Amino acid sequence: MNELRLWIEGLFASLNDWVQSINDVIWGWPMLLILLGTHLYLTIRLRFPQRYLFKAIRLSIKSEKGAEGEVSPYAALVTTLAGTIGTGNIVGVASALVIGGPGALVWCLLTGILGIATKYAESLLAVKYRVHRSDGTVSGGPMYVLSRALNLKSLAVIFCVFTLIMGFSAGNFIQCNAIAETLKEAYSIDIYITAIVLTILVCSVVFFGLKGIARVCESLVPVMTIVYMLGCITLLFINYEYIWQAILLIVDSAFQPVALGGGAVGGLMISLQYGVSRGLLSNESGMGSAAIIAAAAKSRNPVRLALISSTTTFWDTVIVCTITGIVAVSSMLAIGFDWNPESGGLVMQYAFSQIPSLGSHLLTIITFTFAFSTVLGWTYCGEKAIEYIYGGKSRKAIQTFRLLWVVATFIGSIMPLQLVWNFGTTAAAFMIIPNIIPLFVLSKVLVKETHHYLWNDNLDEYENESTPES
Image (cartoon, rainbow, N blue to C red; front, side, top):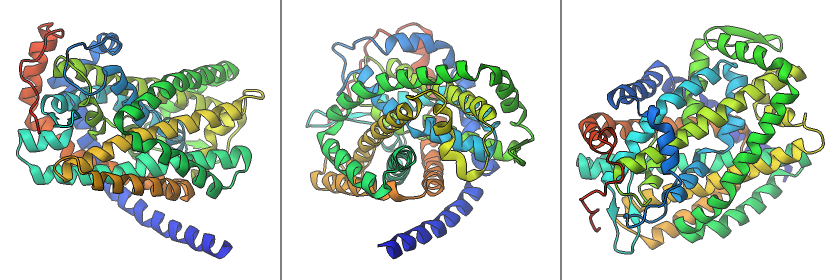
């Protein structure tokens, strides 16, 4: 058995080197400029939709009686948050700060603020071009925008393939790995034992479809987000003497190397690379995955739901990731942490250990809940990708996907931390291009819809066009 484990570890190490070399090429200046450029373009083109944030938050808790859709806007919102608020907000941010330097948080935050406009745009198009199916379900997302609005069916299929790859990597591998590593560190539980238990739990939920997943997420996500935020606020009080020093360090190291733990880390390029990529993995603005879930929600018009969907980026990155980053840096300054690439997964564990008695246990529960709900949220995106590829609801194909998804839960749990994050970063880059093409080509549609419903204050108006049957 030990020989098999050593062989597996050697295989993972070789694979990690190969994936890292790909990321070094993909996440160079071109991809960074494409992603940030898209966020900035849509922010200006749509007249800063970020300014309607509080209106959007109010809309997210209102009912949509008589509107078309499969689930309530709130259910879609928390399911989307389940797919975004996960280990990316804890382990992902901490790893970015360790590897890319504290300054990575600046670029992660900027990606979140500007990404609100992109999340709004991709969700608007997803709702406008969604379809109703004969079984009562609703389908939408970038693949339907590409095929119905631009007649780019081949590119739509390619997007679905990338969605599946992203789902298995960031939506499954990363989350399960975080659970296994956290339980190993906190309670010395063997990762293979965690893998088996987690596989059984995921299997028991994924066969219930969107409504079952939404019910679980509605129960887990809001409560655990509040608990996590209270834990972070407690740590800020504990380390209050280091908060201002942490903020200055974060800002300074966004543009130049800063010495931490005896070594130089950070710098503009590496801070940008890790800040933007981790921001993307966290809020998914520009990837189109959230738009797939948003398209299933009840809505009077596309703009109303797009506003609600855009709030996920605010909650996920602007609030949760920012607080995580400040807590991580201030805690590490207080503790005297050794900043090295291998320590990324342990930063928040050491930080929460400062809370007497409860800290480590609390973070373990939070990590498990966030990661588990993210696995469930991405299950839906993967199923919709399979559904599109097969031209409708293919029961056999979806059952096969669910089986593979359960198997992936086990594999992800035993993979090394750096490999799962590198794999997820690679997959995210491949989803961006086919998703942002419609955002530019259909920018006039975005402006027209926004002008009518938002700028002319017609958000309560019902859209005249009914979504087509398929």
